[in-house]
Image (cartoon, rainbow, N blue to C red):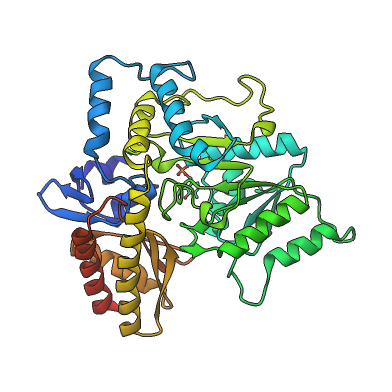
Length: 413
Ligand code: PMP
């Protein structure tokens, strides 16, 4: 029995899914201690959009470390923080005309969501928030209350409340969730305690690669304006270029009041999160929301380097579109040849294969691992294989991964 099985809590998960010991990683390849290589279609659940140990980010990090740059400083001003904010403004906010201010919460996605929740409740004075079916926003109690998955919710051990659940786009073909919400908010007899905000993912990653249509997102934004609800987009997994543009909502032309970012914002897999808020919402008192690890300076260094390297022009966005077409085409052909049991869903470089017979998805994932590919499942029944290759993967490597996946699907579907 390995020390992991002996000592690490039963709560461990990915080490069960992929039972080997990884030693090195570069780009889209992970290598285990026996020297075996795996193509990575997981990318740290969307944390490694620029691949493992990206050389363009590694050197600035090494330089910062060797010059004794500040590693930890709560939210004190450091050269690394100043630099990150400058680059974030010039490469991301200004070109998109976003007036938002930047809050550094604790370094995880759920930290960003908790900060956003606290803020919208403070601003609106209303405790209730709208969240959607199959949403995933994190494991701490506030975020978990927004999360849809019953198994995850059951872990809370206390009531998860102050959330109004609305069907996401496509949840039920016969139910228009937004029309219902609109009606309920407009009718004084609906019994609805007025919510203060809506929290939404543009593509639900954990929920099964459910893609909201652009028109649906626009309708949601319009509804929020009409009913004076703050719109929070959780771009923790779909932001930083996963769907093509830097923010996943750009395609819909909407401007959220609050945006949560984490995962790939540091670019290097270092913990970091941001909350972007419209300036008029910045009603925080100094230190009212805090946390010891708000200023991960190493993440600021790699984050600034990533924005410089990949978001100074539209090269990455264009190549993500091309790679997405490549994945989509092969998956569509594969699904067509396998039959009605398998369907394709996704946007940009998050694509999913959904299996009508849910257990097949996990079986294909297991087989893919044996054949040298990491790909995980998502969805309420783990019925969707979610493909998240690094955005920087080259076409040939992407093809090689798809070939492995295709073989696994053909063997099992
Ligand atoms: N929001 C979304 C959309 C996510 O996908 C995740 C993580 N999968 C989170 C929040 C939570 O992030 P973390 O695990 O870093 O707390």
